[in-house]
Amino acid sequence: MRIGLLGTGPWARMAHAPALGGHDGLDFVGVWGRRTDAAKEVADLHDTRAYDDVDALFADVDAVAVALPPAVQAGLAVRAARAGCHLLLDKPLAATVEEGRAVVEAVEAAGVASVVFFTTRFQSETETWLAEQAGAQGWFTGRAEWLGSVFAGDSPFADSPWRREKGALWDVGPHALSVLLPVLGDVRRVAAAAHGPGDTVHLVLDHAGGASSALTLSLTAPPAAGGAVVELRGEAGVTRLPESSEGVLTALSRAADALVDAARTGRPHPCDAGFGLRVTEILAAAEAVLDAG
Image 1 (cartoon, rainbow, N blue to C red):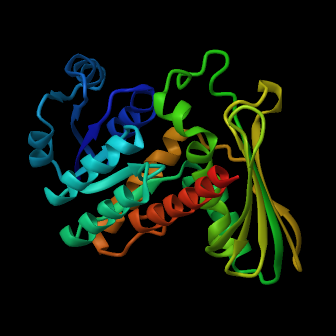
Image 2: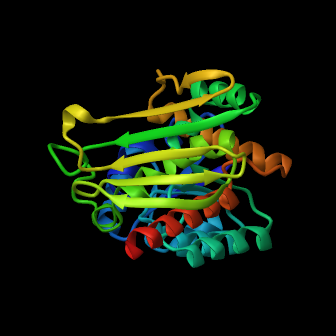
């Protein structure tokens, strides 16, 4: 599969470009960015071509990977789908429900494959654990704590405008939802939402399977308090999401494998644009509850 990269920021440089360039099943054709000089820098590092015309890149590839802010990603994803490109997207799918729905409609109209890269979902330990827990019955409650310190120290994402604007709800909230939904079921209602210190938010969700879950999300936690925990309690007992030994490049390579497979077979992946839209809808519902409070 011939694939291009949209984006030249820290995430594109540390994850997407090396994962695409090192993938045996992909031909890394080129890079487009909003800054031509940055696109050339990334392209030169990976012995590929820099494009100054995004539509020219679409014409030269079978698929694109996107490493751009959600509001930018959504519009370009629509254009790429209409050009017949399969999509390897990042979370969150879009900054609004309307933008996310436009991506899904474009994907469906064009008949292209889509995969949204929720990092944890593409780690093998998580995949095994989710399959085991989804097969169990009688879940009573779950909790997810996803705490980071993005705006402190030397984080490469400290200067990310969209993260500062949208906060932990939209940045790490998708990770938590991507793990809880396959086990506890869709969210019927955001029962409660409250602000904590910094950009921290606390959510209580009512799931279609009958269970509830509590989420604590932050990008402004003290560094010593950072980390991610997902715990489920029910008739089967208590279980926690295992830590993964796989880094982001391995996970992203698995996401690329999933896109290749979906394009080849025509079978949607569980983390397709439709799932990305559902996560976006839940985030927007939580944001509305927070704003109303």
